[in-house]
Length: 523
Image: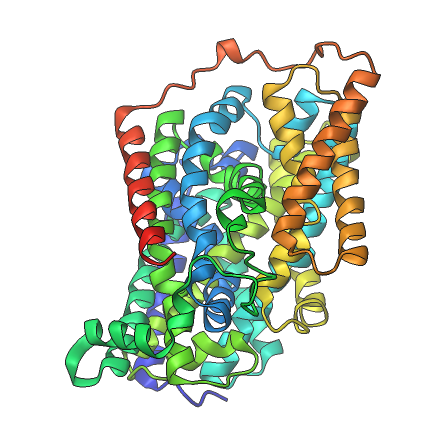
């Protein structure tokens, strides 16, 4: 039963839903006589402009686990959690300059497809199964659970029904149109997300500042919870295990970010769908600046909640509780922006799951001769089944964690060192073999489990960096034990253009300058 939204809020929410569905079906329509094929459905006919690429990257990334989860982490740890966002901005420029040109030159649909082109089919199949499992059991479940948590806190709707509602709504506008529907609705979704996030931050600071405005509210926040404004935590901080000091700048976070932004299907798929490499790089630059902005939208509300509503448990309730401070009308806008973020990210993951299953499992193993129309239908069925599975397992898997964002980071950290090594060696080391790639991937999991078991006091981010180094050494040993020869499938980098346009380079310098200023102020 809805207890916090009135008729005005519900009208805004209904208008949002209608506009979104209209956009999805409008952009997904096909010309007379043209039947949607695999490239249309999974890569939007490779027609996305830069602004759609950039906003879609953010929409795929910023969802419940970011808004609710990072606000909860901001409540517990302060702005130190913003390092995930700000280091991501720099990582995006690295991806755009050095990784994306290779992917686009290879004309791939999926990340496992690249691994087969560079190594062999074993690597492709193993990684396809891994990513499908991760996306369904971690990504989809976390989005549904945390999204439902926020909806329950604001409206009183029971979490199970909220999860079902999110899944059905996402299904309604994204399953038919595929990537094109997802990407163009993302433009609308991100606009609403930024507007709603800025509103809740503004009103939160205004409440703290009273009659003296938001600037006074921010300075009051600095005075009342100064411990929340340390970007680099020291070992005495209770959140040091999650954000271990200088490691957020020079350690395992780089490995985490490269894995997420460079080799993650539901992220990279957006850039692969761009009109050209240059359009994709412009989109990446836009996404980088939006990442710089994101802590104001997703972290600062959590810090404000620490001052306004102390004693919250779990801390992931910080953002939903802050939403309750909003007057009707504005509450409707912010609530619609939260639903937009959840559904945008949900549809992005579902589309990538359907792409992975269809192109890397079904077409590769089950029915290589499948027609284009058949592959599109298989993709829709795979998307539907993945949503159903996520609905069933969301509560048991995610509901036990106080800080779901940290749970997701900790879990994925078991795999990321091996994934990053597979790709980096595949790109830049001609001697790397398929066996060494598999050794890196399997060792990453085993070593991470061993460190977790026998050295539980080691912060997970430090563990990521250490495992990365050990796996690299093992992969090199295996490669040279097999002869250490250049591989037949090694990439010829001489035929790939890594030169970027001046506007891209200037944008990169701008982000670095901004971040140096931030870390200088709040070191």
